[in-house]
Length: 142
Image 1 (cartoon, rainbow, N blue to C red):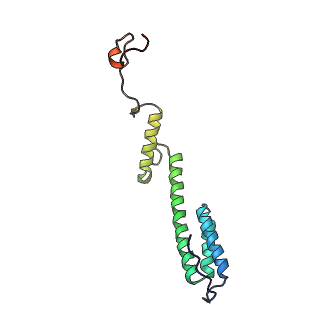
Image 2: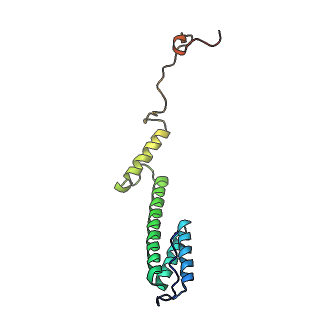
Image 3: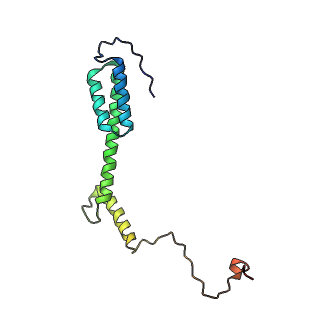
């Protein structure tokens, strides 16, 4: 929580009461935290138009934060789109080359060719009736 910049009344630039500004800043932060970035951005824009002084600086900082988050979100969405829609051999340009290769590798693994799975330990099956007492200790059912 940021400390509320005490009302102070003056400042001349304030078109809204300090309480209204605080409320809008709070709302903008709330929207930012709940992923309603467009709303947060709109509120910041309104604040920047209407206020000056310290609240304006806070609104500016918040607007920058929201913009950065929006950019991050767009990048994530683009990556998700690439992952879900990219098929091997389709437009493998440099930007999406890696994704294409990863998708191809996964497809190959799913078809069971190539890509050996390291998960299975390599064990040689024992012939039936082999003497395993030396390996496992004395048998339990004597």
